[in-house]
Length: 479
Ligand code: TRP
Image (cartoon, rainbow, N blue to C red; front, side, top):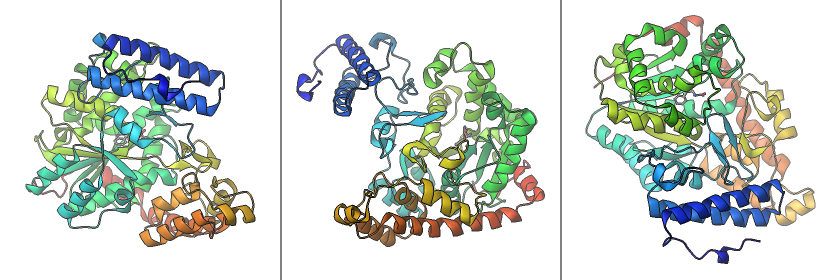
């Protein structure tokens, strides 16, 4: 049994000694896990490991990376270009392809901020956004759904000096079926577009999905067009929004491709291996793809919008799993003479079965789709939404429910805008006054109209509308 008292604090140790201790402790965590040791024992070992990592960072100024002794571990810049997709040391797994944790409350986002080297969106930042925009902060900001950022203060500084910036977000079109979780970044991006009154570019990475999935080019392109309709249905202003498919725009825009090539020249295979975990047997399309997701961060990739201006600040709202792409982007930006994009990161939208993983379109029962009927929504929530309630009404009344693991409650934090109502539900559920069935009913009644209205707006989006959004053209934009 590992006790915290075994660990006396090793800040005085040499980097190499610490590194060896970390390696040893990482092995220990792994063997405890594979031996299915008791949870308390694994937790204690993980705790110790984390403490060692903090000390390591203190001593070396670098993030610990398994297998890379301190002297060789110099790849990282301020952005910490380190492999963090790996899950060796008991951390939550968070990378562009997979999200999982052992914790029913979901990923530990505070830990993720430390690991990724980003900054927390604290109350001071939320207050500042309110002051600068003169608008009540979106409930995603008030409730920590967008919880982490890079350089948002700098964006606000720029804006206060009456200089504009632009928004960039994207979507990997892997199927027709989008679920409610996919809407989160777009709902928030639409709010940002409205309050700051700025242009937006949306990248549809149909090329990425072709490279990663067993799909044809035509299927991926078709999904991009269909998904664009759902994105447009979020209410974006056609005069301020450019949506593009990589398969179409890469060939049509010499400036875009020039930026892709510049980025490709400044990132080595070693670096993308470290960041994304690519191996020698990954196809070269995957290996060079990150440059394509990086390129829209630079304003001169869109001459029809920004002319040849290369210094317009970019802000990227995205789910935190996309951060590796943009750590890479921020690392290359100054080396090719461009400003680093700023970022706002969101948490994941949990699967119906629980916050151990995010909602996934490939598992129909884990998701509420934008095409679901009112009845399907009701049935799925009643049948699958993981409950933090007690097994019997008597016990529930006596002990109360646990909102921290209750998926219906989590969904309400995303979709129920009324703060007071939400707080009352939290209290009543925790005290046992509100039963699981009643909580689910509130969620069903909140979600049904939201989805129905989305479907109604999507019906209005014609092929003609899609074409307007996707045609390269000037946007309304005051520099
Ligand atoms: N790779 C993302 C996905 O699979 C799509 C994407 C491209 C994106 N550019 C982006 C997401 C910028 C957020 C921000 O969904």
